[in-house]
Length: 309
Ligand code: GLU
Image 1 (spheres, rainbow, N blue to C red):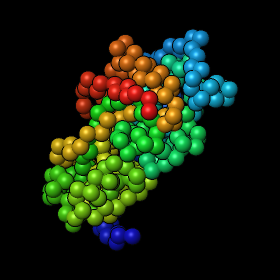
Image 2: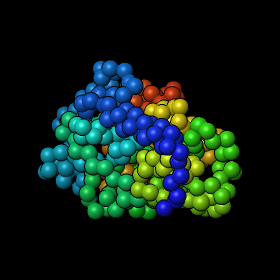
Image 3: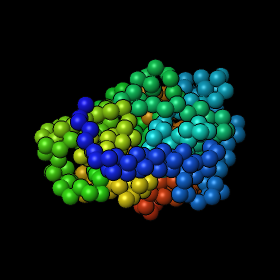
């Protein structure tokens, strides 16, 4: 454990900030209501449920049908992307909206969706073991992961970046990380990139990025690294304490993870994403969630729809 050395004043300030962060995160109401800074709930689109939809070639869909609802893996501590309200237990954010759009397209009312929080390191196993039907949570598509799971999409393009305290003046990009304590999530592509490309950085990993952020605010690490989309959300919650620095230094195309052999499900989700991008649902969902961390809606990246293997 790194040594915890804060002046009493600093410690009180940090405690205040952490409370503010917890309150801000807890501030979301019902399922489908926006995060704390958001516009009213009506800004979120509703997704009409596909009628008489059948997907006989998808074992995942068939099983969900028998069960009566879908189970979707998500994150619960990523502002504007996937957040769980600790009071109500309800989830909100851009990834949650994508999960709901997909549910409606597959013929399941989004209100019946069950969300299951799964950390970065456990996503492939969760899909392989059938714990979840699909996964929507800042999940980068890459060839290594494609050997284990399938990916619909991409539905968003992020890039690796750095979050530091506002009083930090030495870190402007990954080139400044030598000798610095850098925190990321175990099993994530940003952690792997730091290890491979910036070996002089002192990499510290936890299950989740919110633990890294707590460690940043209490001076136990010098930077948090992951996708800009995630970091901008944390910074937006307490802009006086944290800032995102430098330019993104990777491409992180977000996909919807599915069981590897379920090509029928993957193609159905690709089709559904294309429809929701075209009919404006994607942009409405972005504006009411991730857009609140400051970046205007980009054009979604082209859907890959790679052949079955
Ligand atoms: N997009 C990166 C990844 O899939 C980082 C975010 C995350 O850990 O979910 O590894």
